Length: 117
Image (cartoon, rainbow, N blue to C red; front, side, top):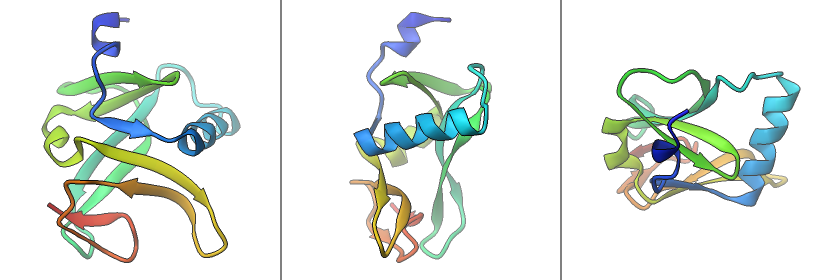
């Protein structure tokens, strides 16, 4: 594993709640160490773009980072939309799930997973 890549500053951050939930999901779903957390964007959704969040293997064109023991893969082109974003996990009565706090979003949607930049 190339540690020079892993020690680079990650463009996104994870809250303690997100880290705890991601580690729990990894264990429950028996996801092997060759998978990392893919963070990205794709076209679609009610505001124009959707967030991508899930375990995946590294692909060509990915940057690789590590945050609190979680390996993160991100397509280099997605960094423009995600720089400075914080990923949280909430356990509220009205909502439960991952929350994306993105300073680059000029508009968001009520679903919480769609934005425009």
